[in-house]
Length: 339
Ligand code: NAD
Ligand code: DAU
Image (cartoon, rainbow, N blue to C red; front, side, top):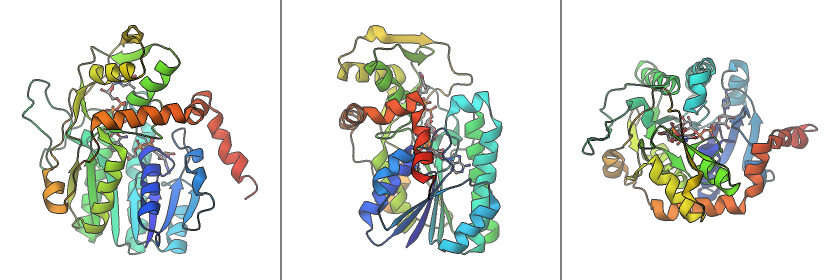
């Protein structure tokens, strides 16, 4: 099988590539990534000599490049992780979110249709469902919950989801969509809550908590998300949406305190800062469908997953220190200038 993974130099995409190459020794995996600020080729450095792996630097909105790559590789599966993914950035600069997340998805589907891929999988998010109230723990997002978005980021992901479903129905493109809750684990870019708190606390810097820290997220260890996508790709039904969640609801303040406690840092590092505009209150996923239909459920407990994650950031200080200093951007130039 030949698999195209877009956005594979980012957090979840890179973990997915490692998962696929570990799990299927006869698969060829091609990573297409623009290497925006969030894409980091040092993450994939260990695969440089792997004969089953190829890295291509490119933009999913570049129609010519995409069609040429599909012609050359004749992919069986396409898994689209490539996106602008940070809510705060979408509030500052929405335009690029619409271009990458919507138009990019359309161009990938046009190529998938033209070259007859066996499955186009869209990696979506629980944020397309908007948020849930804090005082109704009985309410969860199911696949039937109406789309109702809060940020330019989530609106762009929702628009892409609708387009993916439209391509499924109108052109019979074999599509699936997964809508996952908040991931955490290795290679998470240190602008997002968990790696931001770990990296700042390790440097004894203040850790910013938006509002009063009561907003709730449902945390899932990244490897569990990768396994879910793998199962959907191979066994999911064409045209279906699958929710993927961790059954692991925690307020932001709880998460921050757990991390500070693990690192033996004082809670006096916590700094309550101005809230995010339009801040979603609570996400909580009902994963019954993927459990019943495909047999997937989360394996990692938050208590063990967060310890593993913190240990990873302790063991891989160079990885995030290069990001914070900006030097990681040089890696591609250094490695690829003569290739
Ligand atoms: P990320 O920001 O870490 O990685 C995104 C990757 O996409 C980067 O490597 C970036 O260089 C690449 N990219 C951006 N624009 C591109 C373009 N125009 N062409 C090619 N590549 C481009 O994101 P992530 O957290 O790994 O999220 C991956 C996907 O999963 C996204 O679609 C996101 O919406 C979705 N998702 C994320 C989470 C989460 O908790 N992080 C949860 C559910 C769903
Ligand atoms: O739910 C899935 C989504 O999870 C993905 O679709 C997004 O791509 C991903 O970025 C993530 O979105 P969130 O906005 O939930 O993640 P973030 O890490 O930015 O923030 C998590 C919570 O922590 C949120 O309530 C905002 C809060 N926060 C965040 C930052 C960066 C803080 O309190 N302080 C911070 O400095």
